[in-house]
Image 1: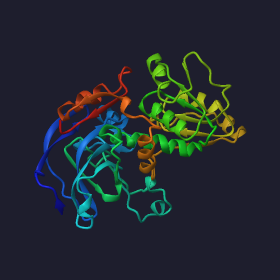
Image 2: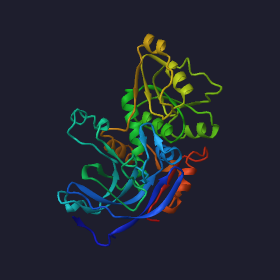
Image 3: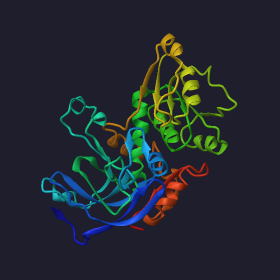
Image 4: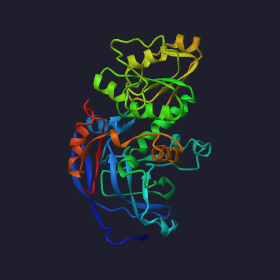
Length: 344
């Protein structure tokens, strides 16, 4: 391993020790394998999945059955390299694509590495995440970011990647129209991604007035209150659900024109009833979003060019001892995105 000086042998980590309980623990600093780099963490965004694990202890089939470090929206600086990685990478500012596919299965070879059945993903049991000082990742998943992209925005390239993947799955092109349910972090990021992909009509629904108003600042051309306003007659090219709420999914499907696309992003119930007759009669394509593939270069370019703005999404900043507060306040309608700075 090649590294800079001053790297300690141990570090503090914020650990989910059981459902609803976070504790600071001393953990060893990981040593990068031959194809990996060691990254000193600069910023970590708090994701809805982190909150789910903290409050519920599971997401679907992923169950926290041992202490787990949360956090997978990560930026930092390379401070050490494995034997097969160029020493010249030391000092690079990077955004971490927080996954390790096997690279040899049928899904990986088909270019769908996000669907790798052997995927190791940060902060998904049993793989630890980044609410700590140092992490390792395979070198090609440590994406160099330009100086125009600050550390917090670099960390948020991860949720932007979800928005980019949703836009790709929705088939958005210049002139497209899209309905997005939910004006939380993923909803407003998806709205910005849609505009960056050329969508000229971006309708965002949310029952909270403050969030609707904020969506207008982040790409929405129209906002609607789903408790009052109907979307049935919109006839959009695509619908992206960022809520997981059954009523939002069902009404959104009804807003899509014939041969349009429905993209399910939000986490909700495992099973919900769908309007099958509408899907059949309109020949709608219904698909899910499970992470992403090859999105970081696009994400960094969009932010560097000013086509997507991530820094204004940050409404709360915490140090490592404040991770539990960051998780508890993440759902506050007045907030949008919490970021943890482990080294502060």
